[in-house]
Length: 331
Image (cartoon, rainbow, N blue to C red; front, side, top):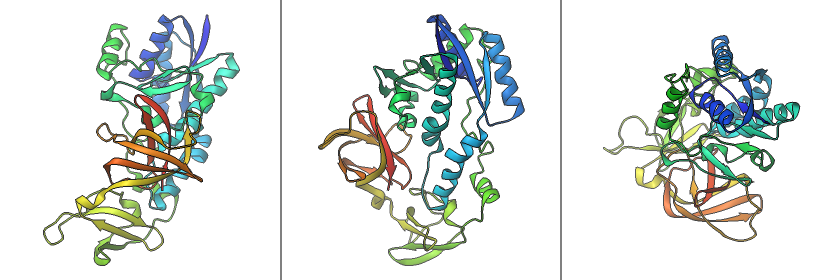
């Protein structure tokens, strides 16, 4: 029987994954990455016992702090809009899973992400809950070992399977928050770590039109409270050097050119212009056609339809149809 190391949180997705993998003939070994509460850990242990799989509890707090929390905080304080899950997946989750798999002699690893893998390539999941965007920075050697049992399912179907398998977590709510900020108060979380940026100016067309509470309170594309000459204004740029938040009209948020740094290719790096589509946030509705080209240390992306408010620090992910070509950070 083939061994497989499964990232196991004790929620609906990972529990259904465990059952599906068992039915496919795998000997499943769960890995719980502990960075939450005692209650969450005990829930995962009980669920693993119910399913009948061994569970290793691994304290990942130090690795999470070094690889994810510290960069996340620095990114926000630099006026960027980071996505911690995109960073965590290769540096903490899949790294830990691969290390555990090596320890137990398992060739493959698995998680409950809603995406698909085949022959070392990554593809979109079902449109209603596709999570391929979050996996854009996975290392190719990690991807080559990865099995995603939920890739062909929608969430409602997975819950139905949980009931069919009589799992005790079938009706357990989904976890939507950042795992290391469970109360969703990222400003409070930042304030406990470091001195926060001071208040500064809102500007519009170079003119000061108000005061803001600190650049860490805003993201590009967010609406600014109130009206200016009867018009709504939106955050268009955040300048950490001057603590200035620049505003723009809705129609001025749209861009057709952007660049991405630290690009992680999940295919051979192209030598010319690539025709693709691009997504710059984890939403379902923006994925316009584009042309992309490696230019020095950056990937220049020109879209055929305007993108709304691409923000520094967000991931720009390229797709060839359903396949993920890779992703980098918007500059």
